[in-house]
Length: 187
Image (cartoon, rainbow, N blue to C red; front, side, top):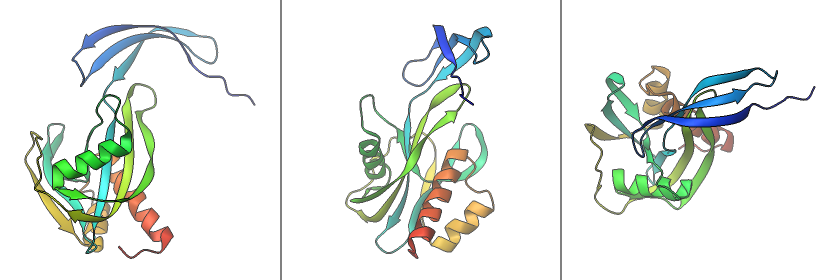
């Protein structure tokens, strides 16, 4: 069976909030030929998300607040990729800015669309191994956050108990732990 793609016939901007959010209305032809004239599409910035492991085997995570998350959540390092920036370069920049750590050992865990029907953006997930502190953080994030150094068991327990309350964060931690398990690494 040949799968037929969707086709975007036209698009118009409904809301433009600069680099953080654009809402469009698309006219879309579905695979069966049906045309939908008001399909909502969200354009958001792509982001890099990094689970970093220090040279002494600790995982760097934040305990933080986010506007759309009630209470606190654990989170790996992450942030928006600048226009024209390579995802790995963005991951490196975010790790340094947010934690003061750098790594030269990077594992690409994949790139994933946030919402397959509405767009939203791409999340580029990474594992950074043997991270070393090279500077003080120069983080300009607006949320309150605390940098944690978690043992692997603490990270696994936090993942199982739902403390990573954003899907892309939980996915990054899960994929990183799966990579480490398959490669036979303890940390």
